[in-house]
Amino acid sequence: MKRPYCGPAGAAVLAVALTAALGGCKRTEPPAAPPPKAASAAPAAPAAWKRPPIIDFHSHLSVDGLQRIGTIMDQAGLAKVINLSGGSGRQDALQQRMAKELSDQLPGKIVNFATPWWRGCCDAAWAERESQGLKDAVERYGFAGLKISKGLGLGHTDQSDQLVAPDDLRLSRLWQTAAELAIPVCIHVADPRAFWWPLSQQNERWDELGVHPYWAYGPVSEALLATFPEQAQEMVRQRPKVASWSGLLQQAERLYRAHPQTLFVAVHFGNAAEDLDYVDGLLTRNANVDIDIAARVGEFGRHPPEKVRAFFEKWQDRVLFGTDIGISAESLMLGSNGAVEPTMADVLPFYQAHFAYLEGHGRAIAHPSPIQGRWTVDAIGLSPGVLDKLYSRNAQALLDRVALKKRLALVRPSTAPLGLADDATPPWAKAP
Ligand SMILES: [Zn+2]
Image 1 (cartoon, helix red, strand yellow):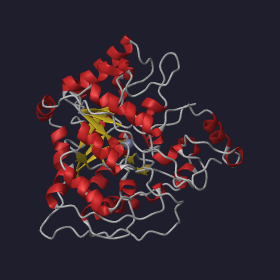
Image 2 (image 1 turned 60 degrees about the horizontal axis):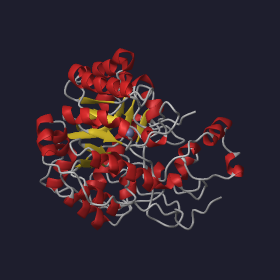
Image 3 (image 1 turned 90 degrees about the vertical axis):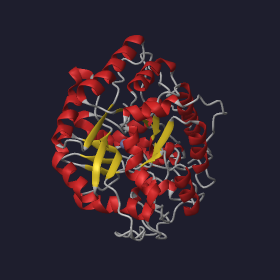
Image 4 (image 1 turned 45 degrees about the vertical axis):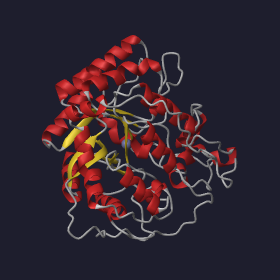
């Protein structure tokens, strides 16, 4: 049995998307459980500045969620949402046609990204099929990008049943096609660092892992395992043996540098919100890599606010606003999900928590996805110019194929040594 991945497609979108993404941590003690103060609904943005209509670059939409999507966009002030669950070309592109049907209902407001169909990976026929499928998605259905889920490296297997790594050369054709089309590739690699640490109630991501123990890659004791429902136990036992957290990030960086003419958006804050210095190095070394902030405010928000603010100032042209919201008629995902299903009443506060962190100056405020960790964050009060780029202009630039082609023409392959993220296990997270 495979565990579900973020970035699915078609009708099952939420069931799978609800898996989501998330961050790890810098702290070395188990978290206490202070109830966070509610985020201020009215962040202390500069008086003369007005928040621009926002582009949420990381969402998972289901065609039956149309009404809710419209309501949420109006409430939160979203001009556009990027639907990373546009689906693959299989079954005569059924999922992609459904995604187009959805975006046609709200013209100019929903932009679909395609997802590969991994069955049959990774021989030449597969590469040809997926490359052609991507071209069709762009040329026939108006798609604007490609999304790769964390299944690459963590779950997708080839015809010999071996895990396929992000830097597998057999996938090259796909990245080349994205370069030729001048469309961005949003790529999720690995998971929060704490998911590799021992699974226990001491794990700082227990609120998620206690509900979804099969999200964890670390060891778990038989005694704890026995407390989970039988199906979850089975899923834990069948977990594939995966690379380490930093090992996966290195595989991803090898991919980025092997394809300097392809623009990669390393989602979830470069897939390494736990290690700000590593992400800084990643962007320094690879001019063809941008990042989004989806479902990671709580994680990078644990670093000192001055340091995070300086990061956003430095990389103001290469960071995209995104939330990892999932919307269908029946369910919602707000960055991640745990024991309690969010409701429509939770959506506006979710966006407001982002605004309060990015624009305001509050101390010890709630982050947008408290399920991802019981701690608070200190706001970073970005300047109006940086906020405008983060909320809208950087996204517009990636959706402009002519501009993107021009930008990529200037990229030279990186020759710097690969970066290594710090995946050390903290002393409190001992094996059970
Ligand atoms: Zn996602």
